[in-house]
Length: 78
Image (cartoon, rainbow, N blue to C red; front, side, top):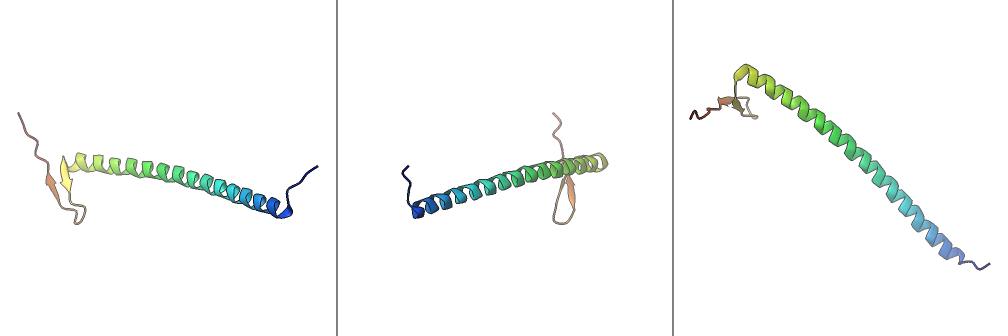
């Protein structure tokens, strides 16, 4: 049976090891992305709940996020 050289085999094994490590890292990144998207969705839900509560209390307003001041949104009545 013919064989490749020891150096060639070591080089090939090293490349396969790097491919495996990259695949592992990609899987980890994909999991982190999934978790971050889930967290973003939860924060958006929470934000929408707060906005709804504020609208019920103050009506339709534009809020300055720097200082908390707000202006009423005037609706055109046609």
